[in-house]
Length: 96
Image (cartoon, rainbow, N blue to C red):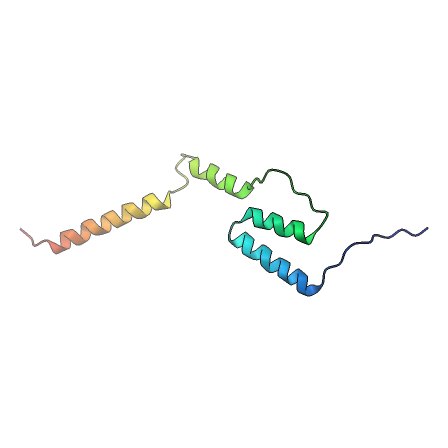
């Protein structure tokens, strides 16, 4: 007896639609839309009940470290803008 897998096959145009939908969802950081698209594309796909974004979690863990290796860009930008304003006010005021 010869056994073979019988799987549903998607047309190339449908695969392209799915990929475009996934790309948009990923770029928009829309995890729920990613899961919905995958479930629609693959009938057998069953995600876990919980969505856990490992990249986001690792980024927030790095941002909370205080070892001085990571610069808070918002604070740095405010600092540089403050220095720039201070210099321009010194240049604008006449010498005494």
